Image (tube, rainbow, N blue to C red; front, side, top):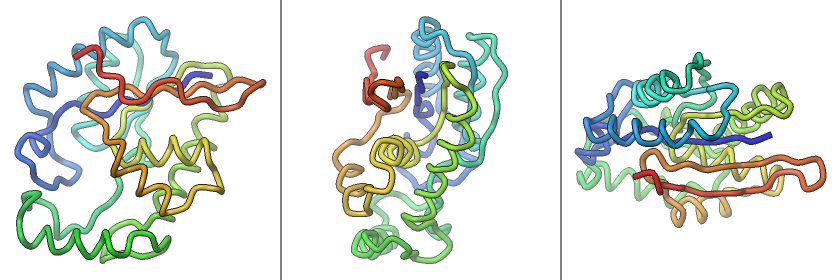
Length: 207
């Protein structure tokens, strides 16, 4: 089995450096990035496409699916981590946003801690396990494409490889030192002999 994760194309939120919710669309640059990654994926012999229902991921998946002549299955478990709704629309460097993020970072190694209406580490970890159980286990030796978001991709990959050994400390340390670019491709391969193997991380040679 091969699982290819693709981060969505550049969104208007990425472009304007603002915290975004689920209804932010891709930028024109993002659409071009996706057209390029779609061409790259034609050689991967993808059998099935799953995608986050968030608009930027949905638009990304639609362009890719058109090139691969495949339908899309939307899955809520692939949506981005839910951050405090009070952050939506605020710039990355907005003083209010900076204050909230400082509090979050101070407490994020606590597995069940939340600032308000956001998701905890355990919440996101549970979603990653559900992806493994609901998607990976049902496709045998198929090649799967998952269109998702930075934090979610990182969690699924680490949860798949480390499973119960993954801690908040390990996750967030990895997160802050392994950011993914828009349309970066991450490839996990499963074999009976070796189990899961991380083949590529954030491959952007198509850009």
